[in-house]
Image (cartoon, rainbow, N blue to C red; front, side, top):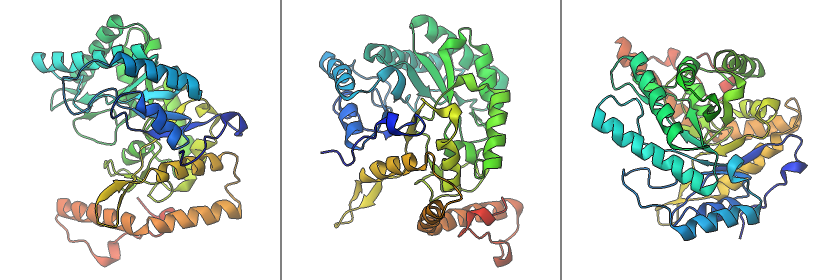
Length: 366
């Protein structure tokens, strides 16, 4: 039985397609039922194991059931189903044998998308592995061009990243430079991860900060390339510009509920798939870790409720306060880790006077 009924997108004040990254264990067709289970209007999935290089092809029965399941439940796979690429793939790899391995796994995923009628494929740009950044970005562009010629229609969607150093994609300029090298611009796009963006130094917490960040994205990358918020509707357990990829439940992290109000009410995002990957693990009566998918069902409804809500209303203020208080202990725990690491790097001991307060993220000075 569904944990929550799906909201008709036509009944919302803006056409926002919200869902989560669901399991495809046992066959890609199971992702459809799992999306229906949580009341999702969009969903992400893995097309194969993301932790090994070699995988069997999609079974014909699973393929047929996926297509028929999407049709039966009213999902447009070409628009609102978003596979995520393997964590093993690094298209910036310079070693010839490893680069070929990465490319083969990548193009195999694109072929699977085409079998299922899926149009968007999300992936991490890659890592320089200590090599020259420009050369690494050049290799990504070359691999994308090669993969586009080997397939017919899938749009390869670059995900922005939280990290610094060798990681490619934490700046809008990285994404711009990769896109510039792609021959067929209709086959490339970007998806924004709110947690990654915040951790990389793109502020979203206030309407003013949100507007500035979006304007920068438009100027540097171009809004026409924004294709999704894929596995990306996440609050952040870590503070601003920390370069730490730690997802928090909506409204409980350092981003806060106001950021998601801005996202849910931005006209430029209408029609895009918007997918949660917030924590859903909890302990059962025996102390065993289990997944509570009711969390996603509830967060989908929470995000839908923000569409058209007055951010100055008592209703919003009460909701914002409740969620913020729920995440206080975890924000403080991560802030303490960040402070200790910063103090160690500077050779100074953290003092009580310098300890940041996180009970109210609006008062923070990052």
